[in-house]
Length: 293
Image 1 (cartoon, helix red, strand yellow):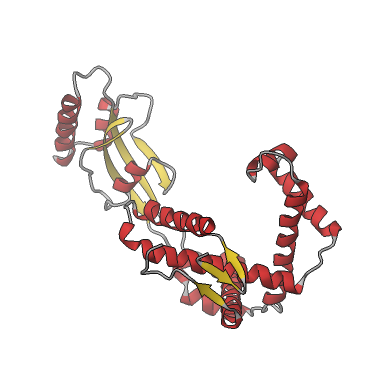
Image 2 (tube, rainbow, N blue to C red; image 1 turned 30 degrees about the vertical axis):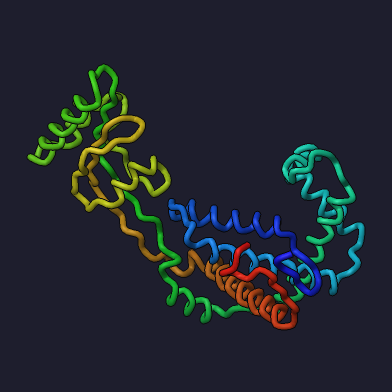
């Protein structure tokens, strides 16, 4: 075994599964293969599993007995949220109903909640002055969403001999726009979908295709884009107007400020608690990073 926490062994398969999960997250986020960072990811996996194991051990120590009523209540809510017993068992990946195993896992969840509640208490009460100070120091967290109003020319491949033909046509339209012709009129004249207005109106990030938004939100007001493609065809766009992201008034976001402050308090207290557990624990890593696994 590679990892032993206070005498409890963590299977190599579990370590490998956690490692693959972490590596996959980084690869998806960075859109690259991160093989050179494997030792780092494996170390992170072991640290995550050590922390979870210590938390579970402490929860069992503090709350060895959990009332059946509490377990039944929690299990009932989970089944209801899943949309029924069959869906619940399918979601947790069990091929058959194993109530004893499920109740044991649910009991562990109840223990963990009880322990964390004890760790966080007493939670602080923030004054309005403290919340205003936090708001001022972190105002970038409380901005409105940036918005654009965009004019759009879109031509699909229908009826064209090839893609190059449509691309050249769009380049000509762009030159006309750059020469000063009315962009909205060009859209009405050339759009493949004549029912769609060239004026897309105001929109925020996440409301259009990612490829389109990547171009539009990178442009200045009045700027005309290069010709670009999506799965729908070739496009040109012009940013007609832009509303910058601005700080929301404190009174509008006061509850959000309070929630963020409370979350930061809980995160800090949780990390402190985990470090306390680690200092008191006996953690044996029989295969430290840098050696063959």
